Length: 86
Image (cartoon, rainbow, N blue to C red):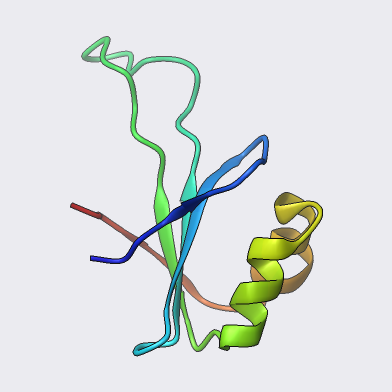
């Protein structure tokens, strides 16, 4: 299982990188409102981006603003896929 590192961000909860598969995992904070059907708290989405270099992942983790870095360097430049983590 990939280990995620908690980050300081208003929208991103944690980041993880798997160098063996060049995959970057981005966990987003859950929505503030509970699920309207069940009333239970919602889970945040986890998106995996493939083809990420170790350097890019490290710069993302160390960015002064991970949200700004995400929007400038990752979102829209790499194909993301929603996944479930155990």
